[in-house]
Amino acid sequence: MSHADTHEVPHTEPLSLIAVSDQLASAVAHAAQAVVAVHAREKLASTGVHWRDGLIVTTDATVRREQNITVTIPDGRRVAATLVGRDASSDLAVLRVEAGVSFGSAAVGDPATLRPGHLVMAVARLDDSGPRVSFGAVSAIGGAWRTWKGGEYTRRIQSGFALYPGFGGSPLVDAAGRVHGINSGGLSQQLATTIPADTVERVVSQLVATGYVPRGWLGAALQAVRVGESAKVAAQGREGGLLIIGTADGGPAATSGLLVGDIVLALDGTAVHEPHDVLDVLQHMPPGRAVSFDLLRGGVFVRVIVTIGERPGGNDGQRTRREARRGAR
Image (cartoon, rainbow, N blue to C red):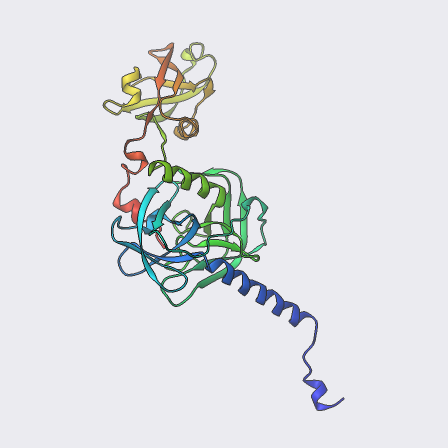
């Protein structure tokens, strides 16, 4: 065997790894055509995605000001953008770039096709120096869930890559360059969590239409309680419910006749045991909908019709400075 033969590069596995590496680099380049840097806070930029029709999607927590926003687009230009709307509950905000600015939009994939083990990336842009990447694999896929902020997502997607500072709002990109959602740093302390693309599309459409996401509002503070043995007959056999411990002045609960001390047993026939059960019902009801409340009032079964209101401020009236800053990347 010659000396040259001993240094011959094998032509099997290393070449396949090079091919995979080249494919991932191509996927990044493709996705990066729709990725922008969002300048909506002091010092560090965050990331956004050109979703469609001049609309930029980023995370709500990284938008610290609502005026004088600019974005750096893929060709390095820095252009003006205006805030279309924001939704703290889902951690999404939508911006619109000025008319006449043209560049690539996201190739949106189907997040339902993702499986644990699929190679994925977060593609970010912080300035005019080009895209930045964090690489890993899908760690977990789950069903529909509600965030600690109250937003409802169609599925849980968590990945094992790091969301570095500025990566909030970055797209979750697969090996073909498709965008399956928007990465948020404020939904989990352990893993990068992605807002699924179908949820993003729903929220974007609502924000474009109204500037906020309309959500049903009851205006009552609730606490889980057990129903005593003597009241179970009146409670139609139910063992627990939700005690009303406070109502908002002028809110739907108060104006519809709900009283502090009432025990809520069911809404439209659906039993409720924890406060989030009420949120589950209200989440899918438009403001103005009449809902039947089954109650125990002084040990007597009562049915009250409540007209659901709209949460004040379109969901953002309750935002606090702490919520806006928590988990921002």
